[in-house]
Structure formats: C-alpha cells, structure tokens
Length: 362
Image (cartoon, rainbow, N blue to C red; front, top):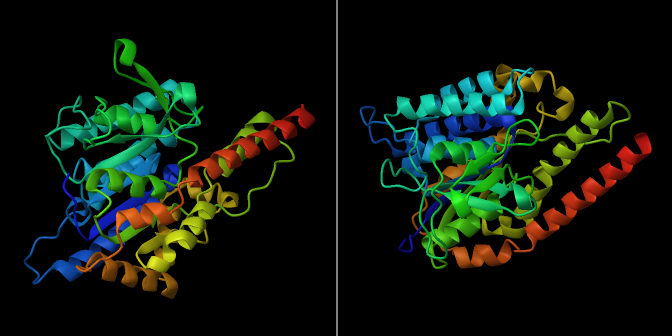
C-alpha cells in the first residue's frame, strides 16, 4: 500500500471479559471524535473504522479489533456482540475447552450473519474491506513465537487463508480454557493458540503499520487501550496447580509494565496515548471483575478523572492533526526492537520461578 500521512493507529490489549472496559473507553472516544467531526446535528456519526487507519489486538482485544475494523461495527454493536460472547463462552464455569471454543464460534457466526457476511469469509478479502486490522496468535508447536493474522496483504510474505472466525478463535485460544485452532490443509495445516508474549501488542501495531504503509508514513496518534491495572501479583500460598497456573497467566498478561516501557520509548514524541483503568479492576476484585456492569462502572469513573480527560483531549488533538511529522521509521527505531526478546526472557523467568514453587509444594 502507498505511504500515507497522519496515520491513526489503535492497539488493544488482551484482557478477557475486561474487554468491556476497552469498549466503554472507545464509546467515549467516538463521542468526542464525532462531536469534533459533525458540522451540524443532522450529519451522520462516523464509525470507528472510518476514523482509524489500523486496528490491532491480542486475545479479546483482537476480537474487538475485528469487530470494529473488519466487520465495521459501531461500538454499540460490538458491545452487544461481546456481551453475547462473554455470556456464552467466558462466563459458564462448567464448559470444556472445546465447548468454549464451540460457543465462541457460534457467536461469531451469528455476528457475521447479522452483518450479511458469509461465515467462511477469509480475513484477507475484497468483501467488507473496512479498516485494516490484525490479531496476534502463536503456533502451538512454537508457542514462544508471535505471528499476526492480517486483513490486508503485505509484500514480504503471502497472505494467510484463515477465515475471520478462525482468526478470532486463534487469538482467543487461551490455554487451557479454549481449544487450539486448526487452519489450512495438507502441508499448510497449522495449529494456533493465543499468544502469551504479545498481550500488549503496541509494538506489533507499529511494525504492522510499517509493513503496510512504509517507513516514510507519518503518525498522528497511537492509541493503546488496556483492560485495567491488575494490581500486585503474588505467589499463592495454597490452591495447588490451579492457583499456580492462574498466577503464571497473570504475570504473562500483565501489560502495564510494557506500557510504561513504551511510554518511556516514544512518549516524548507526544503522539502516544495509553488509556487503562487504574483502580477497581485489580485481580483481588475477582468476583466483581467477572461482572460486566462492575467493569463498565469502574471505567466510567476512570473516564471522569481529570487526568483521563486531559489524556483524551490530547488524543483528540493528535488524531485531528493534519501536520504530523513523526515517521514510522523513527517510531520503529525508538520503540526498541529488543522489547519482545525481553518479554520472552521475562516469561521464561516467570515459568522457571513458578516451576520451582510448584516443586516445593508438591
């Protein structure tokens, strides 16, 4: 694709059911953007895919990226679809991994039909082009590596034939809660799971934008949306293997430290906006954070904070900037290409500590 100026990029963290928080934040953002865009009350509100140039995500963040980017949903439509998915695939405690994945597939099939699309629509295709979007996943045979399923072709490698639905299932295939996903046939058949090393996919968003638009393209804004600060993560004193597995997941999916690193790397350029609830969605609120109404209420409180309003004002200013000067070459350089390596080391260290803890307990 030809180089484009004043790009608006969106990165959505993985967060499971707490994706409701991202949708609530996006609803506020769309209100602000449409308020700025509308010249009079009769003008129709624009949708997210019309405001942004690339939307990418990991896990449920990837699911939301596809709903907003590929399926061209409004935030309200995406919220309704996400609520159905949570109700049928995430909330029930008595489902097997294959049953959870089956429920997620059924909800996505319903969503495709509601938009008048075939359920076997490929992620890369001419139909319903929407806004370019990507999701992050990992091959099951090499879970430490990260790959992107894209809705757009790139020069450096052939496009995947994966369907929209299978891409969603792959990025959401958190182990062991969901089943892995198979795509392709013959020698090209592959098995995919959710990526533990890219729960915070802002680095991938910059890299994908570079592949898609070229290094000379300028960036007006990078919006990184989290799902709430997890709080302090402590090793469990009891609970056996299940508690250790839960702690391991929390450590690998803690995006806040990586977000702070990115802020240090590119924050001085003035185009990076990180929005994530700071209080109320910590892991010790586990009973409340399984309830959509609690998640939305905490997010509403966060959006009303003065610091958050200032961040939103800056974001809207950036996104409407028509004279952006920061290039993707610059961002790719300063965002530090070694960040994924550091994350892999961190994950490996976490696994080692947890294994040691487990050997002491059992």
